[in-house]
Amino acid sequence: MTSRSNAASANMASTATSPSFQKPNSVTVKGFKIITQKLPILKADPIEEMTKELGITPPEMIFGDNFVAIEHEQSPWGIAFNAFDALDRVDKTGTSMLKVAYSREWQKSREKTHEGIKEVVKPFDWSYTTDYTGTVKPGSRPFIATTKPIPIELLKRPDPILFYDDVILYEDELADNGITMFSCKIRVMPSRLLLLARFFMRLDNVLFRLRDTRVYVDFDEMEIIREYQSRECEYEAVRRVSLSHSLISGTRSNLSGSGN
Image 1 (cartoon, one colour):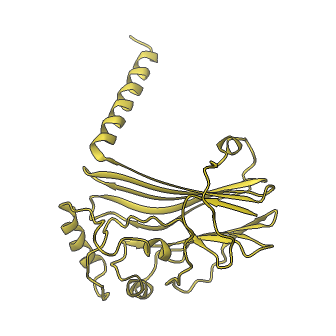
Image 2 (cartoon, rainbow, N blue to C red; image 1 turned 180 degrees about the vertical axis):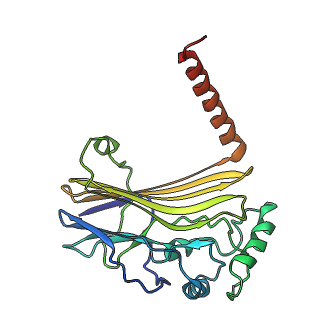
Image 3 (tube, rainbow, N blue to C red; image 1 turned 30 degrees about the vertical axis):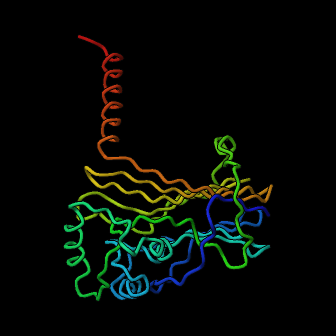
């Protein structure tokens, strides 16, 4: 089995979760088992435990029991995405912190949101930007650097979807000044699967930021490709492009409509 990536493998870490009795969703295709779980946001005690372990103030909504995992049943290989490990990759030094006026508003909102929870107060990236590319199972063959892209044309084929899920790991509204979210989408076809783990941030009037990790598995070729992309753009630039597209669409609609 060949594993290729342009990012280093992550280490497994302990997770702070609440007791769960709901059976995860799963499907097995050609020796690969795909597992997902979606449960409500964590309660106060698990959040406090996670806060102590992470050393940073948590987001407003933490889905600490949620995860997406891909495992190969005939080998030690596996990769998973969970909230704790994603947040553990957030900058805890404050060097990457967005230095804008909203940071003060955010801090005040955290004091109210997690009132009664003992928090570790120190500078960190309050946008919860993470470069998390997944937690690789111990004993897995490591990813090797490659320039080989994910075969988009194969993914465009009208193959039946055997399994699909959309799982949120964490979310924060940045003191009502935008949104930051980490989520995973996975779709499984008879011969391949694609997982998209996306960090998305919109800080109103300041910045848009995307960090995408895609994991592609070809069941027949026993090949796994992991691709990581990081992009960001000023808010005003995105707004201008969106406005231009809206004006063009509106013009086309008017031209195609019937006149009086």
